[in-house]
Image (cartoon, rainbow, N blue to C red; front, side, top):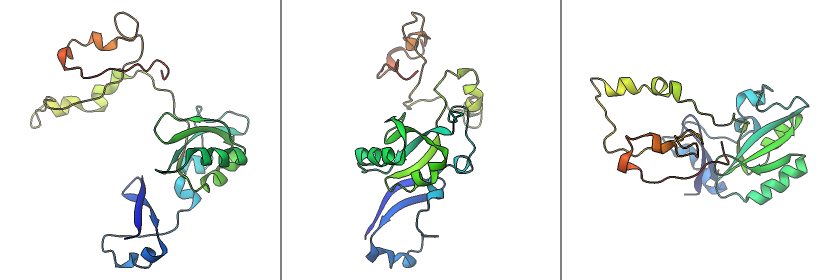
Length: 195
């Protein structure tokens, strides 16, 4: 049909590559509310666009630490070249797939958003830290386990992050502290570099 969905933008919005032939037929799609060009502002978190940065992002010297998400199928090396040409530095793989962490002058954010391969720009996130103290209440586990839901997790597989060194041996064997896992543990990976 000449329309390829290339990325999701919350809420209920998609980035799409549209051929000129398909563009003329968009008005005939009954489920389509709107279509338009992607503006630089559309690809930047509103706080970042407004110049508001967290302590993790603002370096205090006119530069900011950002992460940029790339559209699926984009050549990462080409984007890195464009970032360098724009004056970005400290360009490295991000915490999530298809993301790059960068440092750039605050005044270049609009130009950064004009790079075609970039789908989203956000301030640097805080490092992952253990916060299990409030997780049960934040995820409303008690509500789900009580009537009328009475859910107990049977038949589900979950991913669990444990900070290194939190296990009884101090070597990152946090899973060992959870006897409730018993034989149900499917896999385990080290994340020493990320914590």
